[in-house]
Image (cartoon, rainbow, N blue to C red; front, side):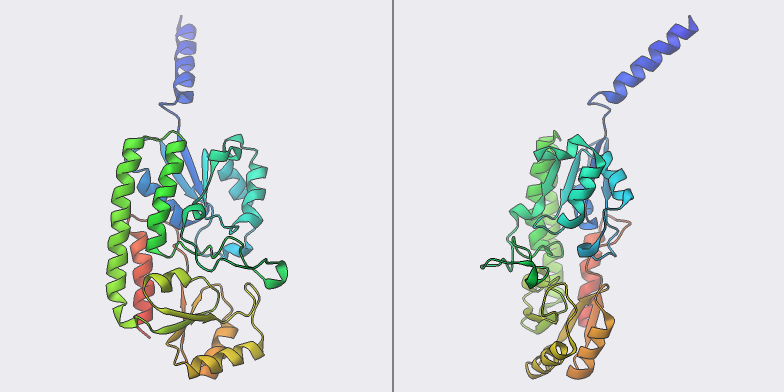
Length: 301
C-alpha cells in the first residue's frame, strides 16, 4: 500500500514538473546588458531564470565557444543576442554544440540588432581585408540608453512570441523604457559641459554613446577595425588630434595600453580607459551605475 502511494506521489510530481505551470523559462543572453534588460521585462513573471554567457570583461570579438556556454545553452528556451554579426564567430557554434532544438527554432534566437537604429552601416561591399567591419552596421549599441529603449520593444516581442504573459510584458516594457529615458536625461545633463567636444576612440565601441550625449566622434585610432595600429598610423592620428584640439581618447580595458600611451605621448592628449560593458553580478540599477561611472571618468580629465 505504501509502495503504491509512493509511486502515485512520484507520478504526480513528475507530471507537475513537466507541465507549463511548473516549467522554468530559461533565458540565456550573450551579454550582461541584455541579461539586465531581460530581468526587467520578466519582472513579476514566475519560474524565469536569466543567465549571461559573457561576464562583461571579455573582448566579445575574440571569445571562444566555451563548454560553459554550451552547458547554459542546452537548458535555454530562448537566446538573446546583439546580432549584426557581433557574436557569429562563437555563438552559432555554441548553439549547434548544445543540441537544443528549442533555441534552433526561429523564435528561439532573438537578435536585438534587427530593430535598432544602426550607426556606421557600410554603403559599399565589404571583405575581410577591411578588418572587423559588420555588414549590418556598428553592433556596439548597448552602451546607448536610446538604443536600449528600442531594444526593449524588440525583446518584449520575443518573450511574448515564446509564450510569456502579454499584459505583464507590456507593462514592463513601458516602465523599463521610462527608466531608460530617465537615465538618458540624467547622464545628458551630467555631460552637458562636454557637448560638441571632439573625442576619438580606439575602436568604434563608443559611437552610440557619443551620439546620445552630443559628443563629436572624430575618428578611431585603429586604421583597420580589429587590427592594432602601426606606429606611423598612431603618429599621424596624434598630430591630427592635437591640431583639432581633441578632448580625449576613449578606450576600453581590452585595448592595447602601449598604443594608448604612444598616442598620449605624441599628442599630449589624455586617454581614458573605461569598462565598455556591464559586468556581473547584476543589480537593479547596474545599467545606470555603469554609465554614471563612465560619465564621471570623462569629467575627471
